[in-house]
Image (cartoon, rainbow, N blue to C red; front, side, top):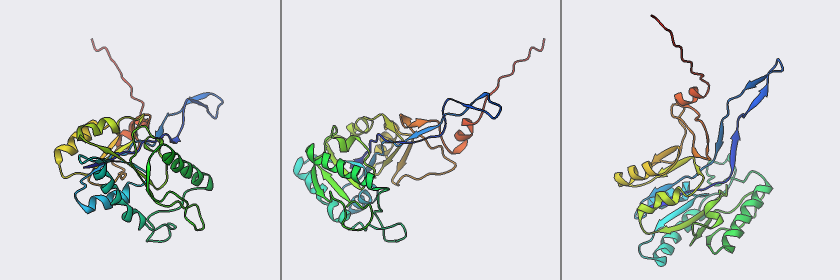
Length: 256
């Protein structure tokens, strides 16, 4: 099995907090609702090519835990299988239906992703492919894969928000939840496995607001969306979203 987890330190949106002034000049309460991006654990079976294709498609900008009972050599071999899949990813604009990797939001963010890659190499991660800006107009960064990443490295603990996949190794599946949970964040989790017991065990033990088994994350208006820990307060969508705007009243009447 493989497990991918993304740890992030970036905030999304804080809708409102504290007290704001009303039209009459008086202070009025405003609902506090915040959301932070969180870890996205992703698990799949490395014995099937489809598992690697899914990892290449959905795992970029994540951290990947690769099972390696055969040691470093076996991990390196499995890591190498990602190279051709990532290198064939088409970079382009959202108007092109063949695009897999789009541009980054700004030149400043392009520089930020570049610095994360430089930091990864400086901390001892092995660059498998990519690692540089694309020679074309726009804020494009080449799809990048790192091997031999360890839990304490910056690229394993911070969300890069760019096409960078960091691959770590593990020996025992029982350690996966604890390592994925080693973060202040917990927005969503993905589990890719043919073993239903593994799916249930990881879904129960990974601290994330949503868990997806054998499919990538998606939003459903009928299902609550929110995270654990620092990944936000409250829930969006579903009946839980209505609760955010509900003030409950208790009324007691003496009938004797």
